[in-house]
Length: 169
Image (tube, rainbow, N blue to C red; front, top):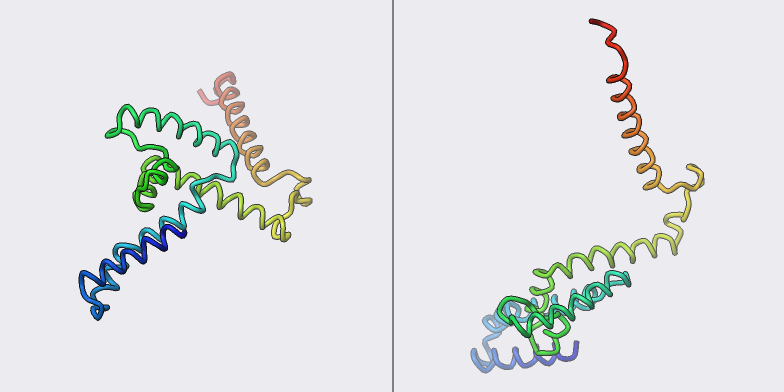
């Protein structure tokens, strides 16, 4: 955050030098065009560059190591690991773009938001761990059971029709 704030101040100073200290009608839109994306990227990367799911995070750490090794050999073909990009001084909007292309930001966004939402739903009693009305079976399990039962009955009926003599011949 501090580095982004310093870059914001530097960008504003540069724009004021370029357009004049009294040219706020020109400076402010130019500043927004240049810097809003950096602030948004900072916010999203802070929330979604690390996964709350340890398996997913371990996978991305291992992929990052492989990605960095490949990047050293093929720098024009492979993005480095996003953490490496930050350390190398890339703009945060460029790091965000890379995480989007790699597929990290959308995947972690979905995972983290689900984990966060489920925690608070349980923490404040918005949903119960077990629904007593269905004997403790979760809705997902009930749907899986119903789908399995329907497939099984369909297969059994199909076999029965093939093995039964035709009634109307």
